[in-house]
Length: 166
Image 1: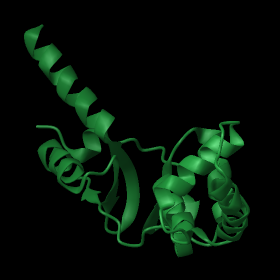
Image 2: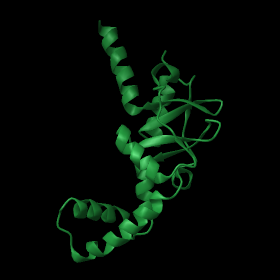
Image 3: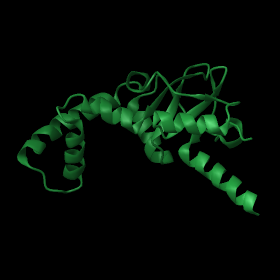
Image 4: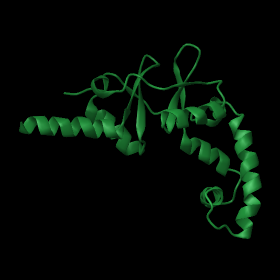
């Protein structure tokens, strides 16, 4: 039987709770990732921040957050925008600057769904599927030990199937 410890990625990019969202965005770009566990001074897991958390935080200021994002993407990449979208661009820019100064702890999710090192691969897959999340931190005694993505689970299952046929 496979366990979380058998497939988890141990070298995890993390962010300290006091770091700015701007710093997180820079790491997202640098490492080509979309989320990171948040740790405290003792390296204990205290949250998780994703690009979705940042989008939701920005979107709170608009009647229709998704339309605002689509308008912003279109505007900044040269797509035609109607007049009312242009009115939102200054507000979106102002909100983006405001959120970039917040700490990750202020914007990220403090109620993190986790699994433990000794959880079975079946349990991990169930958590990912039931909670509709892409990644889950692996902890032991509150300390971050690794992270598992849906892709890690799929690869482990496919590898097991392929090895069974060999």
